[in-house]
Amino acid sequence: MQGSTKIQIQDVVAPIDRRLYGAFIEQLGRAVYTGIYQPDHPTADSDGFRTDVIDAIKTLNVPLIRYPGGNFLSQYRWEDGIGPKSQRPVRLDLAWRELETNQFGLHEFMRWADKVNAVPNMAVNLGTRGIQAAADLIEYCNFPKGTYLSDLRRQNGAEHPFAIKTWCLGNEMDGPWEIGAKSAGEYAHLANETAKAMRRVDDTLELVACGSSSMDNPTFGNWEETVLDACYDNVDYLSLHRYYGYYNDDDPTELDNFLGKNHDLDDFIKGVVAMCDAVKARKRSTKTINLSFDEWNVWYHSNDADTQVTPWQVGPHLLEDIYNFEDALLIGSLLMTLLRNADRVKIACLAQLVNVIAPIMTDENGGVWRQSIFYPFMQVANYGQGVVLTDHSTSPTYNSREFTDVAYLDTVTTYDAATQTVTVFAENKHQTETLDFELNFGELMIDRLLDATQFYGYDVKADNRDDHMQLQPLPARTDTHHAHTKLQPLSWNVLRFKLRD
Image (cartoon, rainbow, N blue to C red; front, side, top):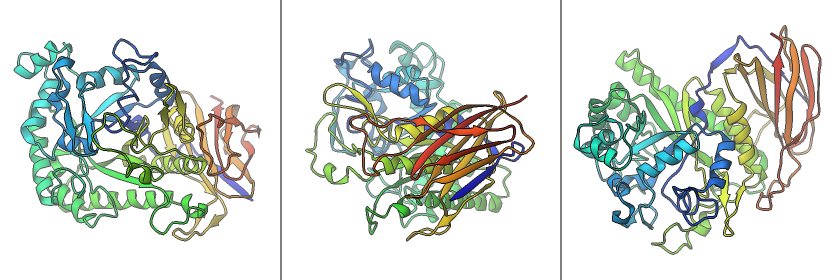
């Protein structure tokens, strides 16, 4: 089986917004407590943050982190998480039926985000709260000094403003599971008025309106149109959420269909882009609404276990998917799909980051380990820099139960002009055949092959709890204008080239 890619650095899809490699931390399960925050842990620093987890996150090179939710957001009082910890209230978290101690709050998150080299993507509660609470939060976070709330921030230890720029206007507000769910008209009006008030306090904000929480919801489509009709002039992004797994009538041995689910993601993105642009045309606007894909991942392994969890615990084991090798292959394809849509998807958040449907796990013995999905995400976040190039690939294809013309060779190429580096991400989805892969650089000249790795050879149902999975060298040969390699069946591969000046 053969496949090829032609590299044309002048043929650009879009510059890559680094925020495409964002992640998500919610006050849910063990994401925070015994995840990123555990004062009694041997590696905890003076703030109570686990430095072993910080080191793992730094390896992922996550530039932006969405917080504090998620479903948790829709009944959260941000004021509970500020001030002396001894005076913070313990609350019932109605979203996940946990106890929330509020020992980790706004100031802790900001200090932690700084330590992992990420900027915040903060969210305001539009489920049980609204305009004034959101405006107050902006004042507390971003106003320099001289008002009650800005001076309260300074009293609580942050003399300088947090200067948080990106804000989500609620979470999944059409979801019947959401505390304070709303109709499209109700949410559209509230989001628009809240956006206006927030920008009165700080006119530099970037605001994300909620799209429908799922393309499977009956609200999908009409929700986007109604919300954008009301909010178009006062928001910058529309959110999308999508998770994948073996759902409904999926057969867990139906690997060809599972690995084709990136086609669903591509269709979803293009459909929402069309909705945004239809509203733009109808309004005769010159402004373009881009997308914030602020929740995406594989999520299905933990569903049965979660039904057995006793409610009203602090940091229970919830949504703790243990990912296998086939999940890592799908994550690689989903990442490439996001890159191919980088002209409109400017923010994306892998949901979530630690313990809760996450690439990083902490165990009962106080250790930290990396899931299978850690590896493709790490490589794309670290090496997918510069611009995305238009795909000029050839490959055999297959049809599955849901999808047609799925390429066995799934690939995307990025080019970083600052370092004259070309990076090729490539996956062979064939279950038994090796793929002979040729890269044609045309008139460009290869200076050297910087690195070539492959992630393969594991049973598709194997996980990484014993830490046996690792990236391996990928044999490749180059001449001045070409590179050749063999992609093993069911493999994730990365090749990086330095071009001649």
